[in-house]
Length: 250
Ligand SMILES: C[S@@+](CC[C@H](N)C(=O)[O-])C[C@H]1O[C@@H](n2cnc3c(N)ncnc32)[C@H](O)[C@@H]1O
Image (cartoon, rainbow, N blue to C red; front, side, top):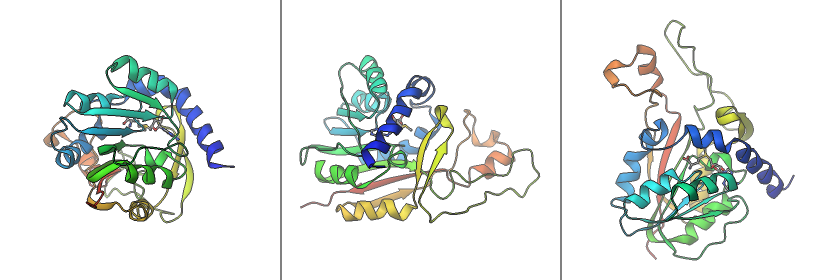
């Protein structure tokens, strides 16, 4: 099957789950965003006046946060339904429907920063989007992204009611694979080892500055002192990776 066909099936799936996704995910309290926010803040600094591309923006909440900080944001997503929701919530921001696996033409040196939160592991190929990021960034500009941690996210943890010692069993890590993920009503996930992400950045001239593996936070809001022993153990195995890469000055 061609990349276009595969990607179009994946996008139809996102279309089908758009409403439930938009109703349950996003915003400053989101457990994935709480893990991403420190690196994003450190790498972007004050976004005021920056041109920022939000790739795979979903219903636009991160674009909205960056725009509230004074950035000029363009959000792009493959789901027309999510983009409609983004336009409704943030009428002042430019949003576009595009397929990031195939349709990523972009002007050279158009953005100071590109953000891409929890999207790349949902794309069948990385090269078109990473090439576009490299082209679109101004020299010195940052590409800050997150993915589900390919080593640990899908590995089955011990059940919370089992006695310690707890573990996650890691298997098949080096083998790229298509997997079905049940989150948000179900969608396709493209497992690839971390080195493939770094290779794609390297091939397109982007240099990794930071790679952060934040502890896995419980979904509910409680201070660390209130976590159970199981939650404290669960936090020691990261289910998300956040990366910042830079386009070197010319
Ligand atoms: C896990 S969601 C993340 C959305 C958003 N960044 C957020 O944090 O809420 C993955 C997003 O990738 C988008 N997506 C999946 N495949 C895509 C493709 N081929 N082209 C563009 N967007 C795609 C989906 O529509 C969805 O909005």
